[in-house]
Length: 105
Image (cartoon, rainbow, N blue to C red; front, side, top):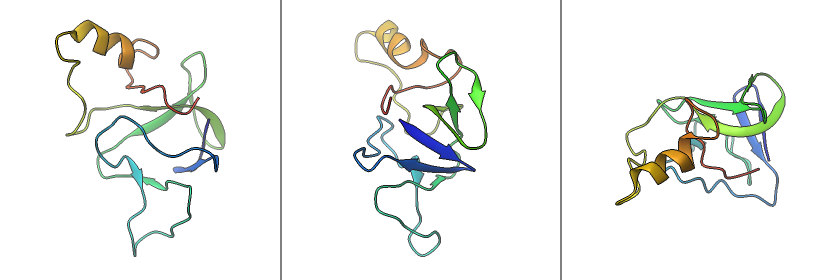
């Protein structure tokens, strides 16, 4: 599970930020942000993350839930080869209007 607090995302020590985004999504910038092993910090430029509860309601502040992204980014996966319906069901069906990889919860 992801724990999101004031735009800083902390991971449980046993988890790695290995989401299927093909780009750094939540990352520290060496020399600009303090780095802590096992945690991601701020969204990368142009990335708009959110945390949703199980009912799809967007949470704010100190909360736990599903990590989703509100808008596309340049390296977003465009489809699953030969099966676009599978792509939409896998990444956009659980929370309509958000990209959800399913990692972390």
